[in-house]
Amino acid sequence: MHLPFITQIADSHTIQLIVFFGRTLLVTPPEPTACMLVIHAENHGNQFAFTIFQIKKEAGHFVEISNKSFVMIAEKVGSETLLSQIIQMVNNASRSKAPIQKLADSIAKYFVPVVVIISAITFFVWAKFGPEPALVYGFINAIAVLIIACPCALGLATPMSVMVGVGKGAQSGVLIKNAEALENMNKVNVLITDKTGTITEGKPSVEKIYATNNNDYDLLQSIASLNQYSEHPLAQAVVNYAKSKTVSLIEVKDFEAVAGKGVIGTVANKKVALGNKKLMEQVKATIADDLESRIIAEQKLGKTVSYIAVDGVAVGFVSITDAIKTSSAAAIKELMLQGVEVIMLTGDNVNTAKAVADELGLSSYKAGCLPEDKLKEIKKLQAEGKIVAMAGDGINDAPALAQANIGIAMGTGTDVAIESAKITLVKGDLQGIVKAKNLSHAVMRNIKQNLFFAFFYNVLGVPIAAGVLYPVFGILLSPMIAALAMSFSSVSVIANALRLRTIKI
Image (tube, rainbow, N blue to C red; front, side, top):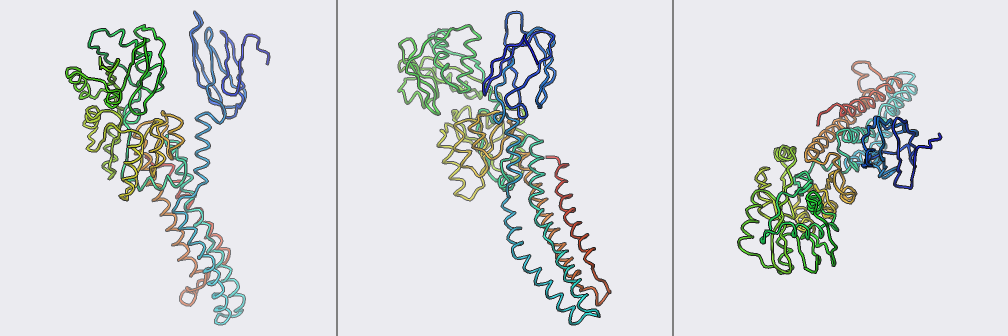
């Protein structure tokens, strides 16, 4: 298709297209069958307004433009897209085995030889004591035993429930990496959760900047310039605030991000430190009592406060607010009602942590936690015999997510966190944990129902096929009826597993 009005620049990660008014564009990404386009618009003078009506997931995507022009960038394509990752995760989980499957496999290992022995005994008993033609009766009944005892239902009991459960989870925004995670989620009795981005929205915004010398502009310029090199959400909030105030950023030397504490660097030949109390202690900054009192007052309001020190003297602070997700309180309450102990571990100060915990009704929390502190806490709880789930969203949460029995990553968080976790919540809120636990409970109950039916069917069917009812009722089970009964048992297990599609989690 010849499109002279389109300029295209493409590589493995980016497709840039400039489309003009009134045109229908045929988009063909590098891997069109697995492409999810993320639209990014840029203002080009009077060429900004646009409308996209549909993007199809097949080769030959049609995009209609209502007016003027826009710039469309496919930020991720192929296997890098969220859609592709979801598909891969669901496929892997559906093929994996839950630990309870090992029980069924172990039973099946002994079940088959036992059935063969029962069949042989049936043949010899009928051949010796049965009516004429005794050998025929013996042969038919032995075959009926083998047919009706086919362990199909036993083999389907677990994988069918897992497959349907994983699919149900994906529909509800709960992505489960493997069947083991699905089963163990039902056993979780302790939930460790991060604060920022997990309990809160993860969209911090600057509320106040205080300078002891009343020179807010210079102080904002210094810390915004320092934060421009950091990818931390709090840093980005400061930078965005400075831009909104039309504050220009200047060069920074010797920039260093101190994990769990803050950032330091040289701005305009002055040593600037921005971070928590631990960072102030590290740089040996002096803090006036009046400034400390103001900071504590802000923290008690649930604000995240970063100290600002210049040349070893604290000269102000920046107060940042991050709203608690509307679903967090209800989710935590529901988990606690289910017997799950919820503990909040945050790198924030104790005053802010207490304010958030009080609002959520949390009795257990720890403040000032570094990544290694979260890891140690999980190991401690596991040593006490607890089944621990960890919910987080950041790179610093990755070690704890990997250590926990069940790592739960927010889909709105970092790729490292998602990769380290066994469960991913697409919407990124704690209500997804409630769904995951409810789903796990429903799946395990369904598996137990399937296993019970499979065993009950064989316990009942094998003796009937062997002819135990014949002396009293004159009833025999033909191989054809046995085959029908065997098929019915498998269908029953499948039908029971499919019920999971209709449950509410």
